[in-house]
Amino acid sequence: MTHSLEDGMSESVISLRGVRAELGSRPVLRGIDLAVRRGEVVALLGANGSGKSTAVRSVIGQVPVSAGEIELFGTPRARFRDWARVGYVPQRTTAAGGVPATVGEIVSSGRLSRTRFGLFRKADRTAVRHALELVGMADRARDSVDALSGGQHQRVLIARALAAEPELLIMDEPMAGVDLASQEVLAHTLREQVGAGATVLLVLHELGPLEPLIDRAVVLRDGCVLHDGPPPKAVGQHALPGHDHVHPHAAHDAEPIRTGLLS
Figure 1: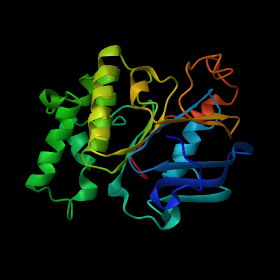
Figure 2 (figure 1 turned 120 degrees about the horizontal axis):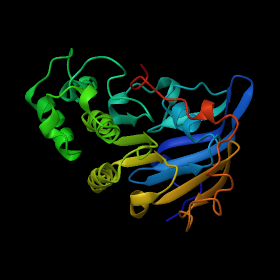
Figure 3 (figure 1 turned 90 degrees about the horizontal axis):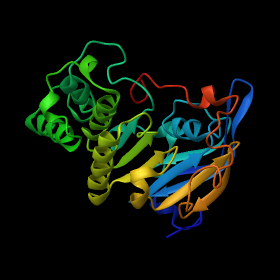
C-alpha cells in the first residue's frame, strides 16, 4: 500500500525531505523526498547516474548533503548514534577490502557494535553463526575470503550486516555481478529478514528474484523522484529510459565502497 510522505511520519524508519547533494560541482540529488516505514521493503531504482547510491550513502552519512533533512528512526541523522540498528551492505566490493581474513572474522566484525568492549559472549557467537547459516556460508567460516567467488563475497557482506541483528537493512545493489545460485540464496535470506520484521531499503539495477518482496519502488532520474509507488511492471529501457546505458557521470554514483559502515 502506498502512502504519501506526510502520512504516518512517526512510523518512518528513514525520512528524507528536500535532500540535495553534490559530488564535486555536479548536482546528484536535487531535493528528493523519501520515506521508508517500519516493515516496508522499498526498492530504489533508476538509470546509472540517477543518484541511487548517492541517496543511500547520504542516509548513512558517507555523502554530505547540502540541503534538506534526513532522519533515522525519528532522530536527525547528525544526532543518530545507535548504528547497531542499521545493517549496511555496500556495492561491488570485496569482503575483506584486501586485508587477509577468514569468513568468520569478517562476519564477526559486523557484531562488534553489539558487544561490550569488543568481548564476544555466547549470544554474539550465536548471532554470527546464525548469520553465516542464513547465507549458506557456515561451512566456510574458517576459509580465507580470498578463496571466495564474487557471489560468495556478497553473501559474506550480507552476513556481516545481519550479525548485528539490525532493524533496518540498507543494501546497495546486492545482486550486482552475483551468480544465479547466490541470487537465490540472497533472496531467501531477505525473505527471512522481512518475515522477522526487518525494514529494507534496496538499491537495485533490476528487481529480479527480489520482485515479490518489494512493497514500493522509488524511481530516480537525474537526482529527482520520478515515481514512488507500486513497482513498475517491467524494469528496463521502457520503464526507465537509459537504464541499460552508462551515464557519463555514472562512475561517481557507482563508486565502490571499500569500508564498513561509517568507517
